[in-house]
Amino acid sequence: MIAFDANVALGRFAASRGRSFPTAAALLETLDFLGIQRALVHSTLARQSDPMEGNRLLLEATAGHPRLEPCWVAIPHREEPRTLLARLGEHGIRAVRLFPTSGHFSIAPECLGEFASALAESGRLLLIDFEGPSWADSRVEWSALYALCQAHPGLKILLCGVPMSGPANYRALLKSCPNLHLEISQMVTPGELAHLARSGYAARLVFGSGLPLRHAGAALALVEKSGLGVADCDALLHGNLTRLLGSAPLGAHPTLRPAPAHPGVVDTHVHLGGWAASAAASGRPEETVADMDRCGVETAIATSLWACYGEVCRGNADVAQAGRRFPGRLYGYLTLDPKHPAEAEAEIARYAADPVFRGIKLHEETHGFRIEEPCCEPILRHADARGLPVLVHGRPDADLWERLCTSYPGARFILAHVGGMGPDHAEATRFAARARSVPNLYFDLAATRNFPGFLEELIDLAGAEKILYGSDYPLMDFGFELGQILHAPLREADRALILHGNARRLFHL
Image 1: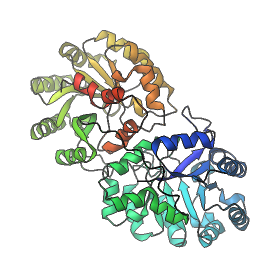
Image 2: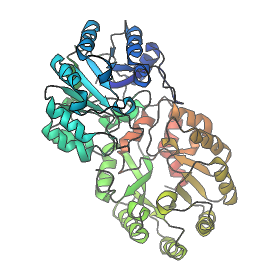
Image 3: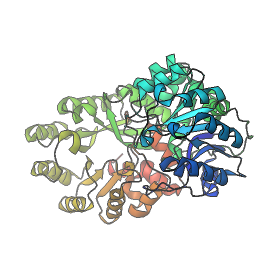
Image 4: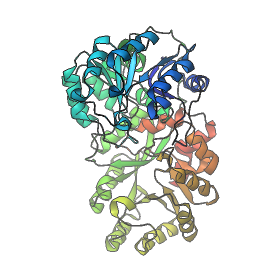
């Protein structure tokens, strides 16, 4: 299969600690590794600072590289629309991109004015990107987007970086806005691609990666693990964008590099129960196992979202029942709120001999405590005495965790989401470096919004034996994080440790 990436930036992002593509050759090297045939490319300088100069540099950089199609960045109120159209025509530019958040303008039709009318008349594609920093961001102007689609039905619109809040909003818009299309780089809701295809919207989905701010493997795996048929995959990966741009196919090479097969994957960060902030599945055990089967996950260690949000006893009972219904597929963390010591003690006693539970979960954020508080000591002493893994949603304070690990050497501490902190979080790399020298300190990759090369950096700092695959399902699709591991240039031994080896050792699976 071939892929045409709608969402790639060329140049350096000033604030990012991650990898950039300063030249077309550097970008093409990454595309070649992944097997992505073609990319619609915009300039980081045009995005961050100066569209006129950035667009000019983009033309220079992509000249002589037919696999890189330039996309100009525009600020609608800066240039007379007809003048812009003339320049687009002069250089053969078939797509224009807006960044309304950083550009401080609205996409409402009364604000875009003649710009939208002129673009619609020209038949060019309009990409709109609100630049949400994470999959949970909700800054899209949904009402303005609807008004724009309605006011200019001939305008082809591609919304980039659709956040977790997207399904609650765009599902209705797709029905009434046939000119609206969605780029999938942050479409993390489990099974969402298949849902949209079943609803008749396969022709409205466009593959995009978000390179270099996002890892292309995530979006690739969303497609690979979606369960879509060949025709729908072809349309999503390249056909829809080719049609929207009116561009000619380049042929069949290169083709996507297949992800290496890894049986026995263990997901160490899964939730049961629903979450109001997501349009995801309800988190029922049968849905969880069905999605595990779709994505090639053999075993999951789960905690209850109910338990994270106050119903600790009810949530733990639900996890216990799920583990008994699906033996060998679902195991559990015993979620405890240390602010309620009598309850915590009773829950530990109730499930001490239950083979479903293989560790403890502590959530500083939702339960409102700090792991170093005295109320946590009885729980940590129990984990220390039993040699239990303790998954903590907390802070990557390297000094704090070294003290805790030294104080409770029998416990196996796993800090959640360290691998998901992204390029602007230097504390993640400091924590990873400390984990190498602290024997009982680990971290997971759940809820990743990483850039290419970050996982390799974490492996260099901490060692692959300290890193665990986690998805944060049902907040995120199993495949989203899997893709960033499967499509990374790792040694197969390291990949195996992260995907299942470390988890089987820690949780005695």
